[in-house]
Amino acid sequence: MSSPIKTFKPLHVVSDVSHTLFTEEIYPKRLPVILRGVEIGPCQEKWTAEYLAEKGGGKEVKIHVAPTPQMDFIQKNFVYRSLPFNEFVQRAARLKQDNFFISENEKYYLRALGDDPRKDIADISHQFPELAQDIHIPPFFNKDRFFSSVFRIASPGIQLWTHYDVMDNLLIQVNGRKRVVIFSPKEADKLYLNGDKSEVLDIDNLDEKKFPLFSHTERYEGILNPGDILFIPALWFHNVISLDFGVAVNVFWKHLDDNFYDSKDTYGNKDPLPATRAMQILDRALKTLDELPLEYREFYARRLVHRIQSKALCDHHPT
Image (cartoon, rainbow, N blue to C red):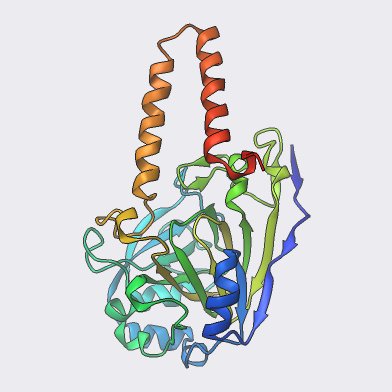
């Protein structure tokens, strides 16, 4: 049985944010914040669908095509297709399609990639230089910590799956409105994770029988208007719904030292190396426990859980 989720905390909104305000007061708190009134350049006025199609030209892009607005990365309810950028933009701006892959109501989503996704990191200044000159990325982090700038375009209604990123990022909403729902890293055990993604697809109409813990999560919610910027600290889960034809640029930077990140990770979504090693060690430990009879396996599994809680979780540390 499904029931609607209604309670949430509004995302904090701060206006006219300067470099000093962000770096000294907002950033150290490690909380998501909507930044309003920050100068992002002429892109906000220029980036209509017609202008994007003209300046972006016929460069081929790989896109997600989904029959429904809710995209599910775990079950893969979408297909990948390639289109010239200008044609993709024109399609994404429409509600119905005359020429389509799945149906006339299909939805489109672009997460721009590097020229060679296996080697190159997404950077709007490299993949779309004519458009990049229209946008001003606020200097809220050191340039040497920059990782990627991801160009994102979505059809009206597209809802991306709930997931976390391992790097800090700014979601610069250039055109269109987005509804964002955010969960703290401390809610991870209630989100039914499969890798870095939640299995809960419809976050507003919960299947309580299948996902009973999800209703106990604390969620933050807000609307990004054109020109707004959302600061998302690493590990905070987010679910994004494009209320209109939406154009955004997502800027990621390394919050940790370089040695924590996989140097071959061009997408920037692999867990930090120590976390990956810890997960591998845990997998081996669980496999070893399987050698024991049930009574012993459960006993030592509880001891492992207790040790993790007492040694690694701040919430369980004695004061």
